[in-house]
Each structure stands twice: as structure tokens, then as C-alpha cells.
Image (spheres, rainbow, N blue to C red):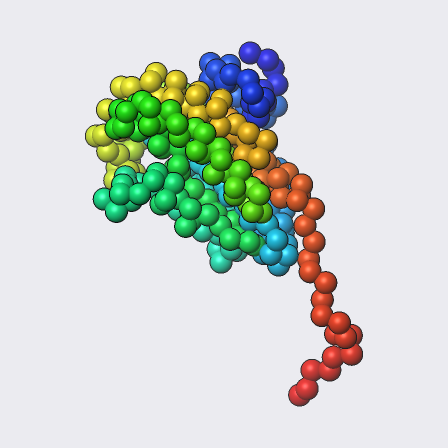
Length: 270
């Protein structure tokens, strides 16, 4: 394991999650040391969101995937703190409805893609169709195998249409998941989040890691890159994601629209 751990797996190379330490926290010794940088990133994110909305040329789609208790909700709550809620839409994808199952697997996804000027956040996503669907054998192998290409083409369509896609896998260890499950069981205000079904998924941890490795390898493209975020320490996870979003939006070289001509001569009547 290198001392400095990248979060961007190289496009075209096989991803091995064993090469990524979920407890990695860079040069920071504590949450307190990272707090100032996190706040600066949130402030900048708020500024960039304002330009994104005003310019109305780009959209930002944030995809969050993780094992149960991986921190998707916490990421949304802490990283997006301070942004204008009118410009953000969060979609949580649950078990497909009968109507959704009557269509192709991307049918339920497309309507929730953000429009120009907006930020969309997927809490789980179309990747469930090559993760839980694969591990739980909900469809034949030939069906889910074809979906990697379908996803890449779908994301290319979005990118070509002005949607910037940033995908985050919140990488937690099995040990950290156990701690978070125990916290949910023992803290009254968290117990509602615990489901017995989470334990059945946990029993297939290795199968899910293999499924994630395939998704991270086969759907890691220049137009929709994956980021593997060390997520055992929530504060480091938040910092990494906030700074990545800032870097992504700054890379769009956005500008406020030119104001209407003749405004210098405007007099506001009494």
C-alpha cells in the first residue's frame, strides 16, 4: 500500500479493493485538523452552485454507492450543507416497483437526471442492477453482464448532453460496518435504520466486493469516472468528496451570464 492513496482508479485497469485502505486519512491526524479545509470546500461549493444555476449550461450528477451503513445519507447531509436546496435534487432508488420492472432497467433512472443548472444526487443508482441483482441472482447472468455496456452508453449520452457525472464508492471495511450496525442497535434515535435484511447482505460481503470491483473496473470511463473514497472515517470521507466536487465544478470554467444591456442607466422609481 502506497503512503499516498489515490481515489481515482486508472481507466482501463482492473480494480482490486484490497489495494485501497478504507481507513486511509491522508496527512490528517484528526477531524479537527480537517475541519477548516472542509468548511472552505463547502463555502466554495456554494459559490460554484450559484454560477452553475445562473449559467444554465451544465448539470452535475453525483452518484453515491456503498455497502449498508457506508455513509451515503451522512455524505449528503454534511457535504451539501449550505448549498441552495432549490438547486439540488436527491433521489433514493429502492426496490423497483412492478411498473418499473415492466420496463428496461434504466427507465426509472432517466427522469431523475438533473437538468441544466441543477445538481442531482443518486443515493444508490442504476448500479444496483449489476450489484444486488447480480449477487442475489435476480436475473440470469447474461442479462446483468450486458448491463455494463448499457450503463456506459447511457452515461455517455448524459455526458454528451451536458451532464457532468461524478461517481463515488464509499469504501468501508467490514469491521467498520459492524461498529455502525451496533451503534444503530444501541442508540434509540438510530435503531429505526437497522434492518434484519442488512445481515443477510453482510453474509455475502465477499460476493459484493467482487461485484463492486467489476462495476468499478468496467464502468470507469473518462466521461463518468469512479472515485474510491476511504470511508471508515466520516470526516475524511466528507472532505475528499467536497474537494472533489469543487475541483470538478471549477473544471467547467463556468461564468455568470452577461447582464442585460443598459442597466447602468436604470433608475428605480419611488
